[in-house]
Each structure stands twice: as C-alpha cells, then as structure tokens.
Length: 135
Image (cartoon, rainbow, N blue to C red; front, side):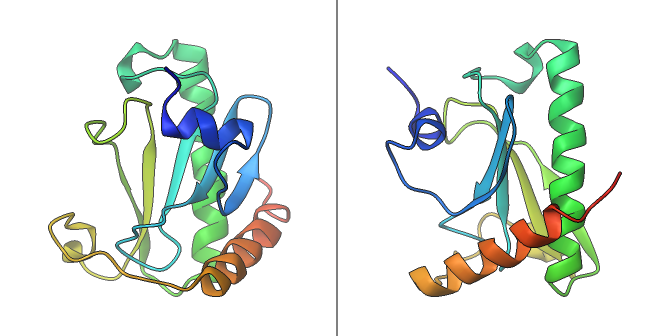
C-alpha cells in the first residue's frame, strides 16, 4: 500500500508543494514546528533513509540543501535545522525547520496552525525563491 507521501507525489492527496524534480519532492509540513517547516522526500518510496542507494541519497541531500536555502531566504531565522526521524511515516523524509533557538526543533512542542491561505502564500514565496537559488 502506498504511503501518504507517495499519494502526495502522485497528486492523490493535495500538498503545498515547494519544489519537485524527477526524483525528489518538497512540500510544507501541515503540522509544522515553525512557519516554513518543509518535508523533502525521494519520490521512490523507501521506508528507511539508510536503505536509499548512495547516489539517490546524495541527490536527496543536494535537493534538500537548495530547498533549505530557499526557505532561509524567505523566512526570518538563524538557520535551517535538519532532522530525519523516520518513525511517523513509512517513507524516508527530511525535515527542514527554520530555527532561532535549539528548542525550535523540539517535536514535543505543540504544532503551529496556519490557514490554507497562509500555507499557500508561504509555499509560493519559498517556491519562487527556490527557482532563483543557484548552488
């Protein structure tokens, strides 16, 4: 059975898309820890990030780097935090979270809530920035 993330990639479930290429997809987390909290996934469904082939894993990290640069150009923050937990959805994914303090990345914190319009506007701004980033 396809994961929720695979269904997002195929368009069966809507998302606030940030970026996409033939191998990777980035979209806003709908239960974010911070404004701009983004998930980056390989399109090929793999449960555990360390089961991804080396070349694909390297590509995923480079794609995530460009997404992270786009986020920090739009969202006021000191850094973009990167974490891989991998227990909540059986599809490898990287969390990119705008940070101002170490505690901004604490998953025990209550999740933020944004309207659909706010999420759409944030995604659009990051997407526009992504298109201008040159690594």
